Structures are given as structure tokens and as C-alpha cells.
Length: 317
Image (cartoon, rainbow, N blue to C red):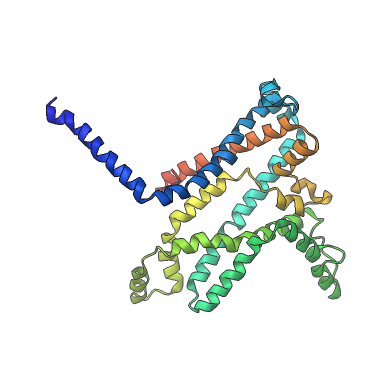
């Protein structure tokens, strides 16, 4: 090896160090802004991983994680032997897949429709109205749902009865309850989800639309051949992230909207963990369920990302 070639790595390191120092001095405000997000993930995401050990222990709140007895996979065996386990997993997958099928396309459709609006003030008003439900608590939404759809005294059923028809059991008949559950979720989240797709739409080259218009393409053709392909990568990434949460379901929505008459569909993993972990004090069993839920979600993310790359998409890593 020649002397000049041996000196090249040393020269590159001496050049990189001043550049890194210069970059830190120039962008120190950005690095300071990163402190809070990093602290958030460390405190609320990584530190709680220590508690996953409870799933392999006969956990006692008096002895703590370090003093509790290790029982291996006994909690998982007990969990898999419960008939309720398969019910809550089925309900979680069912409600999440239905949400994926109906709720996932909703913000895409809304973003496409808003993108076609030419009256600026109307577009802004429409966006604001669509965003508002996202900021309403599920507790308030649950109260509104009962006021609207209750069998006795609900606004919708009062209107139906006044027309000479029979009241519809929106909240007590299982199939109809699922439809109300899905519709409420779409109303709550679709408007907020359009923000991501509207941001992606701004990155599409406007000259493509002008060229298509010169060629005689109408709005539908421009939407199909330019707009949708332009946000396809964003749609794929959002789909992968949604599949990653296929076993994760929010606690508030099924807990608030559920009732004893529809528990065959309303009892999901999050409510099961709440009842077994907090109400029944079976902390080890609830932690085992949470760990199982996280592992299944990880498998779905990896599979979805692999399939997306096989079809030529970018994926999330």
C-alpha cells in the first residue's frame, strides 16, 4: 500500500470533523428541538419495555418486577386456554379489518374531492368542518351517539316512529351496532386523515395537469392518471402503518359505545386488558396479552412492508 493511499482515510476524517462541528453550530436550534421528542420516546416508549417482563412472572405489586416469581410462559398458556381470548382477538381483527376496508379510503376520497374545489373560501370552510370531529372526545361522541340512536328517545328513532315505522335497535342489535361503530369512526377520523394526503397532493407537478388538459383529459381522467399515482407511495406507507395497528384498537371507542347486549362484538383486546389488568388485578395476564398483541402487530408490519417492496413500492424501511 502506498503512503498516499494510507493517508486518505486520515485526511477524510480530519475534513469530516470540522464539518460536523460546523453543522452542529449552524443547526443547534434544530438539535435542541429534538431533545423533547427523544426524551418522550425514551421515557414513554423504551423505559416501559422493562415492564414486559411481567408477562413472564407471577407479578406482585408489593414485590415489584425485580422481586416477583418467574413462571416462564405459564401466563401465555393460561391466556391461550381462555375461550374469551379467542373472542376478543376475533372481535379486534373483525372491527379493525372493517375499519381498514371502510375508513382507510375515506380520507383519500375526501382529499381528492377537496383538491378539485376551485372556490378557495369554500374549500377552507369545508376543511375546517371536516377536521372538527377529530378534536371531540370519545366520551362526548358516545353521549351524542346515544342521544341520536337510542331505541327509546333517540333523535333518529323518534323521527322514524313519527313516520309510522318501528324503532330500529341501532345500539342493541349486533350487526347494526357494528355499522354505527364504523360510521362513527369514519366521521371522527376521515377529515383529519385528509391532511396527509392533501400535503402529498401539493408535491404533484402542476405541469402534468396542464399537459393532460391540453390533450383533452377531463377531471376524472386527470384524477385517475395523475393525482392517484402521485400519492400512491403515501397511500402505501399509510396502509403499512394501518396494518401494523391491526391488532391494536383504541380503548375509548369500543368501551364508550359498547353495552352488555353487544359484548359479543364490543369486547376487544383493549377492554379485556383493562378489565383483567385493572379491575381483576391480573397484571401478568394483561401484560401477556399486550405482548402478544405487539408481536402480531410487528409481524403484520414486516409482511406488509415486504409485499409493498415486492410490488416496487418504497415501503417504510
